[in-house]
Amino acid sequence: MGAMSRSLSLAFSVLLVSLLVVSATDYEYKPEKSSSEKMLTKVIGIQGTILCKTGSQLIPVKDAIARITCVAVDRKGYETAPFSKLSSPANAKGYYFVTLSPAELERGWRLRECKVYLEKSPVKSCNVPSDVNNGKTGATLPSPRLLKTMNLYSILAFVYTPKAPAAAAIPPVPRGY
Image 1 (cartoon, rainbow, N blue to C red):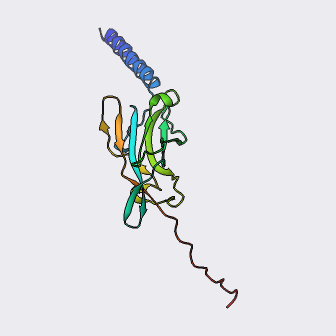
Image 2: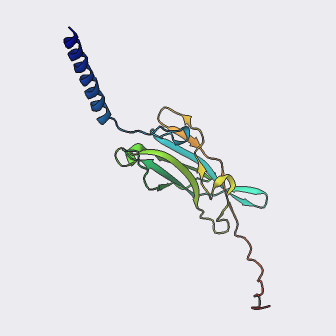
Protein backbone atom coordinates (compact mmCIF):
# COMPACT_ATOMS: atom_id res chain seq x y z
CA MET A 1 0.00 0.00 0.00
CA GLY A 2 2.86 2.39 0.67
CA ALA A 3 4.10 2.21 -2.94
CA MET A 4 0.57 2.63 -4.29
CA SER A 5 -0.04 5.60 -2.03
CA ARG A 6 3.21 7.24 -3.23
CA SER A 7 2.24 6.59 -6.86
CA LEU A 8 -1.15 8.21 -6.37
CA SER A 9 0.44 11.13 -4.56
CA LEU A 10 2.99 11.57 -7.36
CA ALA A 11 0.29 11.35 -10.05
CA PHE A 12 -1.80 13.92 -8.22
CA SER A 13 1.22 16.26 -7.90
CA VAL A 14 2.02 15.92 -11.63
CA LEU A 15 -1.62 16.66 -12.49
CA LEU A 16 -1.67 19.70 -10.21
CA VAL A 17 1.58 21.12 -11.66
CA SER A 18 0.37 20.58 -15.24
CA LEU A 19 -2.88 22.41 -14.47
CA LEU A 20 -0.89 25.33 -13.04
CA VAL A 21 1.35 25.47 -16.12
CA VAL A 22 -1.63 25.41 -18.51
CA SER A 23 -3.50 28.11 -16.60
CA ALA A 24 -0.37 30.28 -16.40
CA THR A 25 0.13 30.13 -20.18
CA ASP A 26 -3.50 31.18 -20.82
CA TYR A 27 -3.18 34.20 -18.55
CA GLU A 28 -3.26 37.58 -20.26
CA TYR A 29 -2.07 40.59 -18.28
CA LYS A 30 -4.79 43.22 -17.97
CA PRO A 31 -3.73 46.24 -15.95
CA GLU A 32 -6.23 47.53 -13.43
CA LYS A 33 -7.93 50.74 -14.35
CA SER A 34 -7.88 53.55 -11.84
CA SER A 35 -11.00 55.68 -11.53
CA SER A 36 -9.26 58.44 -13.53
CA GLU A 37 -8.75 56.03 -16.44
CA LYS A 38 -12.27 54.75 -16.73
CA MET A 39 -13.25 53.82 -20.25
CA LEU A 40 -15.92 55.76 -22.06
CA THR A 41 -17.92 53.08 -23.87
CA LYS A 42 -21.33 54.62 -24.61
CA VAL A 43 -22.27 57.33 -27.08
CA ILE A 44 -21.37 60.62 -25.47
CA GLY A 45 -22.83 64.05 -26.07
CA ILE A 46 -20.93 67.21 -25.21
CA GLN A 47 -22.66 70.58 -24.90
CA GLY A 48 -21.71 74.07 -23.85
CA THR A 49 -21.77 77.73 -24.79
CA ILE A 50 -19.20 80.06 -26.32
CA LEU A 51 -19.30 83.73 -25.38
CA CYS A 52 -17.45 86.97 -26.13
CA LYS A 53 -16.49 89.21 -23.21
CA THR A 54 -16.46 92.86 -24.20
CA GLY A 55 -16.13 95.13 -21.20
CA SER A 56 -18.48 93.72 -18.60
CA GLN A 57 -20.82 92.10 -21.14
CA LEU A 58 -20.92 88.46 -22.18
CA ILE A 59 -22.35 88.07 -25.69
CA PRO A 60 -23.05 84.70 -27.38
CA VAL A 61 -20.81 83.96 -30.38
CA LYS A 62 -22.94 82.58 -33.22
CA ASP A 63 -21.11 80.04 -35.43
CA ALA A 64 -18.21 79.59 -32.98
CA ILE A 65 -16.75 76.08 -32.91
CA ALA A 66 -15.38 73.89 -30.12
CA ARG A 67 -12.88 71.05 -30.64
CA ILE A 68 -13.06 67.76 -28.76
CA THR A 69 -9.75 65.86 -28.55
CA CYS A 70 -9.70 62.31 -27.24
CA VAL A 71 -7.30 59.48 -26.53
CA ALA A 72 -8.52 55.94 -27.05
CA VAL A 73 -7.22 52.53 -25.99
CA ASP A 74 -7.01 49.64 -28.45
CA ARG A 75 -8.00 46.03 -27.76
CA LYS A 76 -4.66 45.23 -26.18
CA GLY A 77 -4.73 48.25 -23.85
CA TYR A 78 -2.32 50.42 -25.84
CA GLU A 79 -3.02 54.16 -25.95
CA THR A 80 -3.71 55.61 -29.40
CA ALA A 81 -2.60 58.94 -30.80
CA PRO A 82 -5.00 61.77 -29.89
CA PHE A 83 -7.72 62.52 -32.42
CA SER A 84 -10.16 65.43 -32.70
CA LYS A 85 -13.69 66.19 -33.77
CA LEU A 86 -15.22 69.63 -34.26
CA SER A 87 -18.60 70.68 -32.93
CA SER A 88 -21.28 72.00 -35.19
CA PRO A 89 -21.34 75.82 -35.32
CA ALA A 90 -22.92 77.39 -32.24
CA ASN A 91 -26.43 78.76 -32.56
CA ALA A 92 -27.47 82.39 -31.92
CA LYS A 93 -27.25 81.77 -28.15
CA GLY A 94 -23.67 80.45 -28.44
CA TYR A 95 -24.79 76.84 -27.76
CA TYR A 96 -22.82 73.99 -29.36
CA PHE A 97 -23.35 70.25 -29.29
CA VAL A 98 -21.33 67.28 -30.54
CA THR A 99 -21.59 63.52 -30.21
CA LEU A 100 -18.92 60.85 -30.19
CA SER A 101 -19.83 57.25 -30.76
CA PRO A 102 -17.82 54.05 -30.32
CA ALA A 103 -18.98 53.22 -33.88
CA GLU A 104 -16.85 56.16 -35.14
CA LEU A 105 -13.72 54.59 -33.68
CA GLU A 106 -11.50 51.85 -35.04
CA ARG A 107 -12.86 48.44 -34.21
CA GLY A 108 -12.15 47.57 -30.58
CA TRP A 109 -11.03 51.06 -29.57
CA ARG A 110 -12.49 52.57 -26.43
CA LEU A 111 -12.44 56.26 -25.51
CA ARG A 112 -10.38 56.92 -22.42
CA GLU A 113 -9.93 60.65 -22.00
CA CYS A 114 -11.43 63.62 -23.81
CA LYS A 115 -10.90 67.37 -23.49
CA VAL A 116 -12.83 70.26 -25.01
CA TYR A 117 -11.13 73.38 -26.41
CA LEU A 118 -12.05 76.65 -28.07
CA GLU A 119 -11.39 76.22 -31.80
CA LYS A 120 -12.74 79.13 -33.84
CA SER A 121 -14.61 82.39 -33.49
CA PRO A 122 -16.05 83.93 -36.65
CA VAL A 123 -16.17 87.36 -35.00
CA LYS A 124 -12.98 89.16 -36.05
CA SER A 125 -13.31 91.70 -33.25
CA CYS A 126 -13.59 88.95 -30.61
CA ASN A 127 -11.44 85.97 -31.54
CA VAL A 128 -8.73 85.73 -28.88
CA PRO A 129 -9.35 82.55 -26.87
CA SER A 130 -9.18 82.98 -23.11
CA ASP A 131 -8.53 80.22 -20.60
CA VAL A 132 -11.76 80.89 -18.73
CA ASN A 133 -13.05 77.41 -17.80
CA ASN A 134 -9.97 75.93 -19.55
CA GLY A 135 -11.01 76.98 -23.04
CA LYS A 136 -7.37 77.19 -24.19
CA THR A 137 -5.78 74.44 -22.11
CA GLY A 138 -8.66 71.99 -22.47
CA ALA A 139 -11.63 71.33 -20.20
CA THR A 140 -11.88 67.75 -18.96
CA LEU A 141 -15.27 66.11 -19.07
CA PRO A 142 -17.21 66.42 -15.80
CA SER A 143 -19.55 63.72 -14.50
CA PRO A 144 -22.16 62.96 -17.13
CA ARG A 145 -25.90 63.12 -16.94
CA LEU A 146 -27.04 59.61 -17.87
CA LEU A 147 -29.72 59.61 -20.55
CA LYS A 148 -31.30 56.60 -22.26
CA THR A 149 -29.34 57.03 -25.46
CA MET A 150 -26.12 58.68 -24.25
CA ASN A 151 -23.99 60.12 -21.50
CA LEU A 152 -24.38 63.91 -21.70
CA TYR A 153 -21.48 66.11 -20.56
CA SER A 154 -22.08 69.83 -19.93
CA ILE A 155 -19.01 72.04 -20.23
CA LEU A 156 -18.83 75.41 -18.49
CA ALA A 157 -18.98 78.43 -20.81
CA PHE A 158 -15.90 79.25 -22.88
CA VAL A 159 -14.98 82.89 -23.50
CA TYR A 160 -13.28 84.78 -26.33
CA THR A 161 -11.97 88.30 -25.82
CA PRO A 162 -11.26 91.17 -28.22
CA LYS A 163 -7.79 91.45 -29.64
CA ALA A 164 -5.34 92.87 -27.13
CA PRO A 165 -4.21 96.39 -27.98
CA ALA A 166 -0.81 96.52 -29.60
CA ALA A 167 1.93 97.02 -27.04
CA ALA A 168 3.63 100.38 -27.08
CA ALA A 169 6.79 100.29 -29.10
CA ILE A 170 9.73 99.56 -26.85
CA PRO A 171 12.96 101.22 -27.93
CA PRO A 172 15.73 98.75 -28.73
CA VAL A 173 18.24 98.10 -25.98
CA PRO A 174 21.70 99.32 -26.97
CA ARG A 175 24.37 96.65 -27.14
CA GLY A 176 27.13 96.82 -24.62
CA TYR A 177 27.21 98.70 -21.34
